[in-house]
Image 1 (cartoon, protein in one colour):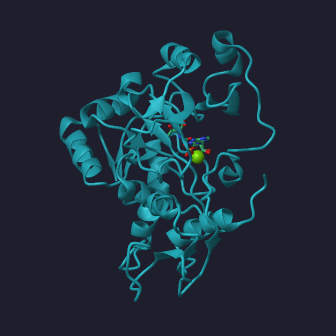
Image 2 (spheres, helix red, strand yellow; image 1 turned 90 degrees about the vertical axis):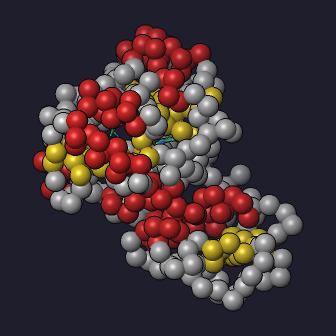
Length: 312
Ligand code: TXA
Ligand code: MG
């Protein structure tokens, strides 16, 4: 359902966001599927709605550069780009700060975060009043084109609370620049030209691999340091166990992704539980079978990658 950005409707949006619900948010690039970026469950609902068979890291939207204080580690180039192009269609990938309160699921377990300040009055108004950060991928089902009008969002998500923001002025996703390494990388061309960015921080490199199409292939992608065994009903001595649903096993080495076999709950818990178990004295992590339906597809995809032999 599409709602005009009246005071009353904005209040409804804010209370939906606080409850961990997902809404349709206009930005100047494309409409986003937005939820509270600090709530794992809210972020899991975004992935559930998108129906993507893998977890793609999401862009975190804030009201201003200050809104990201304590979430990422700034550097000079990032500072210059933010001051020049924000609010606007530029996303910066920076190291996640150890003090970050953002959901690990939102960044698909990566040690970095993608952040931006959108240049749209309705988005900025909502971010300002929400006084927090919103994770938002483009508001289309996986495999469909990005929406530039509220009605496009409604076609894919008829039950979603969508705020009307008119036709998006840019109509193309934000440009993504990765500033976590020695040289800045252009990860995705978009609403701000390469030339405009290079005029501020110098040459951008283009990665030879494609981190956008296959985020799981990214070198920096989180992989546990302990070996992983999948589809395990009974853990071995010395193994930590990530259960799914009722289990007879108990103890400090057992964590349950979801007692009730709720896949959204399992997705919300996944990255933090995996990190929690990924250390000695355990010498491996066994993971219970997870069904290949809904969010289980993305969970299994992530597990397969984490269990695969690693290139050095
Ligand atoms: O214009 C936009 O950027 C729109 C609006 C809604 O803000 N959002 C958007 O989100 O295009 P999405 O999820 O469709 O694309 C986000 C891209 C993904 O391809 C993802 O791989 C990349 O951002 N990304 C997110 N976090 C990343 C990270 N930590 N490192 C590298 N790439 C990242
Ligand atoms: Mg997209």
